Length: 331
Image 1 (cartoon, rainbow, N blue to C red):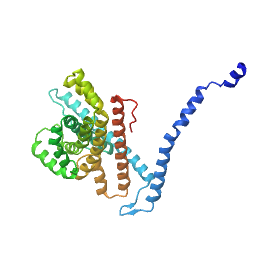
Image 2: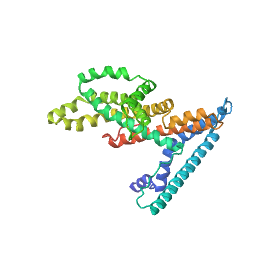
Image 3: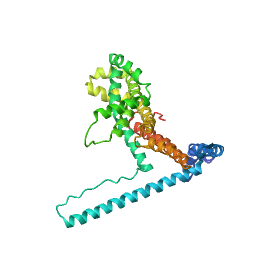
Image 4: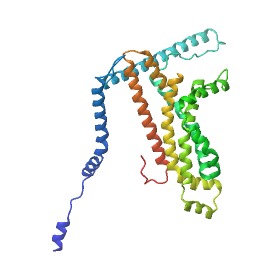
């Protein structure tokens, strides 16, 4: 009887291949659904584009946008080749001049070619990160102060509610005039356009981080605060061991919102002020008015969206790395 029970209870061992296939099947929906959504979007876009005629011609479909993306890559490579040739010729001339006159001090002139699409991307990324870091350095400490002190919150909250709804387009003229008046130098470290864009981004993405940090700190479990009192932690230990770990989810929620807002604000500021970056690229193509301009603008629009998505995923990865609760679901 026991032998029959052993035979009935026998189950073959799972092979590594079956485990791998099971993992693939379990992940299939997560991989297929985004792909299906993307293909549906491309199909709808292609169908709708054929029925839209603008003053610059037919609205570009995916094929035209892909073609212009390749053209922008080609133009970037050609511009880099021109820059390399420019510096090579300059070095050869300087070497020949030094050979004739050892006292001659060579001068290296910068390549003055127009910035390419990828140069504009780098400019926008650099600007938004500087503006975001400035805002974060201010917002997180002030938010912690507001969360810990009701008096501080009561004093600062009216300012938050007053400036939070202000559009970046309203800040931009004021920031431009202030920077022009105060940032005066014969040899500036940064261009005025960069400083103007970065400060505008900072002013607009300050508030989500500040508000979420204050809410996160004020919502800390009272038991944790009592433990800190019982252990008689120093103010710095209380901050690093109780306050920050408990409020990290809300702080990072504010940081992710601020980074997304900052990226949107920057593109608008670059378009309005004609500062270097992706926003200026879009405006220049719009003003250009060629038959290829719409497709190039769509390349820029898709690039702006892709970069915003990547920045958000990076912030999410950082949040997962520093969060103490590794089991929490973060999206």
